[in-house]
Every structure is written in structure tokens, then in C-alpha cells.
Amino acid sequence: MLRAMQNPRQRYRLRAPASGREAISTVEPGRTYVDRESGEEMKVVAQTLPLAPSESALLRTPENLRACRRCDQLIGLDVSDCPYCGLRQPALDGES
Ligand SMILES: [Zn+2]
Image 1 (tube, rainbow, N blue to C red):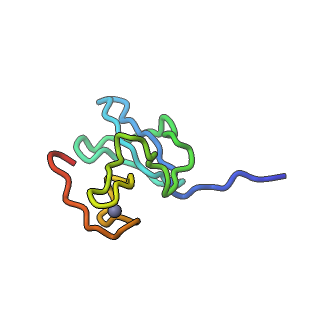
Image 2 (tube, protein in one colour):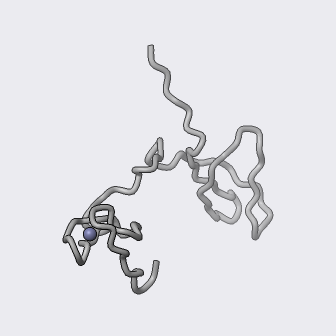
């Protein structure tokens, strides 16, 4: 029987009941989480998806791909050097 692996990076949605403020954080059992602004204790309300975030959690969808100017291979927006030809990629414009 396989047991589900416990992922230490599982994130939870936390909510401060009175103010309704929410935060996403990893949670350690037995620890109290307090909203930084109101000082109110935050309750865990839900696990966030995906349940098991991994290094490949960022999907390689067209929105976060770009074509290398030299070899035209599609590479991730967050990649600084083309993995195919090694061309240094220009910094992204605008926000993010
Ligand atoms: Zn390239």
C-alpha cells in the first residue's frame, strides 16, 4: 500500500476571522500564525492547489514561453540563457 508523500512545501490559505484578511503560507503543526498588520491570529481555511508543488509546477504554456532569437527554440520566460544554443536572453520588459 502506497502512502502519500508528505510535502513539506505544501501551502495553506490562512484567514484572520475578524478582518477577513488572507494569506498564503506554509504551515508547521502547532505553530500560531498571526497577521502582520492586525496582530490577529490566522486560521487555516484551505490547502492551496496544486497539492504537491514541485519544481515543474510552472506550466510551460505559451504565456510563459518565448522563442530564442538565435535558434528559435521555445524556452521559458524565466530562463536567462538559452538551453539549446546558450544565447543570453534579454531581460523582460514591463512588470514582473
Ligand atoms: Zn537559442
